[in-house]
Length: 139
Image (cartoon, rainbow, N blue to C red):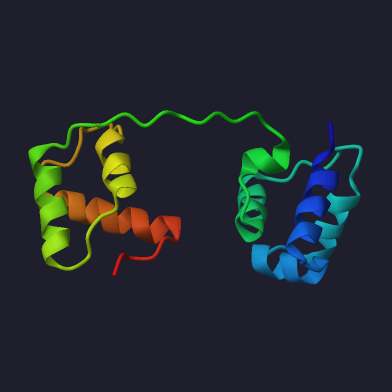
């Protein structure tokens, strides 16, 4: 099994990034990135934030970087609540239709206080998720 250092370097080289380019994209210091790539003994323990920034910059998952097992979850059809259907229709009228994946993801989310009860609440949640995930707003 390859170390994080070896997987990190392999991913960086596969993308054709120099140390400096990846450090800039991931917003970490070039020195720290170099240290991570040289740490074949696994003594360095980067934070989840650093791993997420590196994974994002490399267009891979944290699981890929850490060589963790992943599974594909089957996506069954889900029932949309009335308020989510209303939000979906609103977005379509605004010429910003939601993708099937976005609808599915919204419908299966679990919330402490329950799911949004109105189209306005769904809209606020959706905009918040877009802002925090870095996804672009549909056109």
